[in-house]
Image (cartoon, rainbow, N blue to C red; front, side):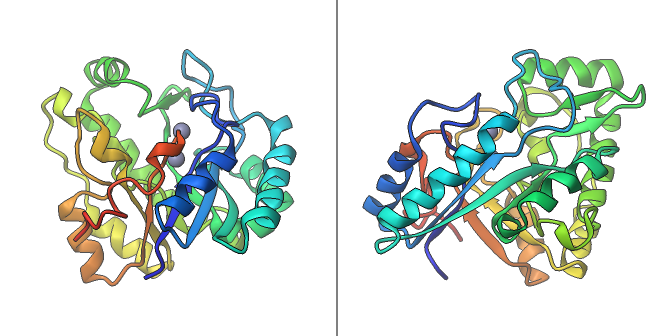
Length: 261
Ligand SMILES: [Zn+2]
Ligand SMILES: [Zn+2]
């Protein structure tokens, strides 16, 4: 398997750090990676529901982002493969808007990730599941964890059903992101993960094998977790390693040291 970090953020991410993309490339080369794929959060088709309004890159930065990858390819392409993609949000009810975005950048789709960070709640508002433990616990107490988990399962199912037809990025991001704060509350997960994995297999999706989870105090494992991972392996799903780095030092975290089974 190619040593590749296929989930990397940049200075264009407002909740990330100011380090330039070049720094990420340099770390990737230093750590001996053969490829790095930038996957900045694509601009949102909704008003950002988080209090800090910093979930994704700004529309007006997309051109500069893609141009910067091109420049880095010219400069470092002989040392490392560099690709440009997006981490695209699957947002229920905003499929048309998202598809219009993807239509503009078809060349990025093979390198992109489709993630679920936002749930459409029964009152039609959107809720970000991974903003903070406080927010998640508050929402869980208000609506019930069962409702949040059920909505998450339903939304991931939609994301795995090729919502943008041939323009769908066929790699699902951190499939169990809903577990990010799980040590902070008591709830037994009743999501049918096997069914989700089977759907991924049927529609030929890959899985983002995401090591950011290792550094989350209320989670502490990669996404997918051990149980889901073994289910994925049984189905022969393709896993692609990613650090989800929001700063250069995290490029390749954990998986390049061989800490993966
Ligand atoms: Zn991010
Ligand atoms: Zn990410």
